[in-house]
Image (cartoon, rainbow, N blue to C red; front, side, top):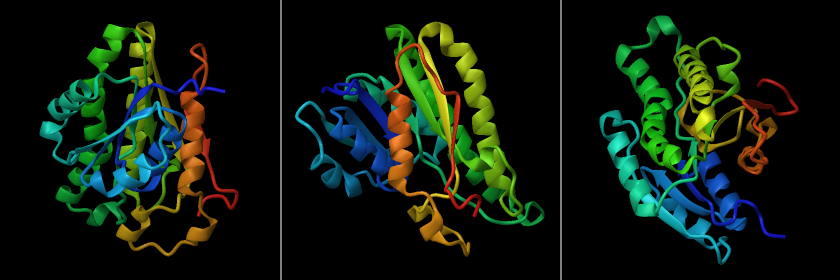
Length: 240
């Protein structure tokens, strides 16, 4: 049976590792064409290309999303080069641990820029094309930290709460244009992100990258008349 995602053009940010790479791999197996957007996209393209079906294609685009002043223009160029866009998966992000009282302004801004402002810029870049074609889907990878605050994660929580609020407003604005906006809020996921912070968690009890990728594929496979605004996906072990 042919997947309804076959032939779809899907842009994924943060696609060179973790949830982004797993999602790209799952989608090309279903026949979707995927644009890998990240600082190091070539790190993943060989692995993902090896899994694609005959109807799928994979292209890599290098982009530093933390440079928010250039994101919108570069995403517009990517959309043009890729031949259009049906779906944007906003996956790129960073973690940050530290009490708010000790968080330097530069670090705060870095988290907000990547986790929230770059997403805003990616969305602005794809919306004109989606409005012209009167269809499109935007999936934002948020976090359980968009629903529940955690001590020492104030900057991260602020960025993810903001992401969810922006997504909900966007959904209201774009519904009449045939554009779906959905967010997924995973609990702890065992990805390379944990290599960047000092956190002593049981990574074996976390969700896997493939768990989240499968959930994103589910969201993208919903019929045209159905939408899940916020999907919370947790490890069975609970909040770690």
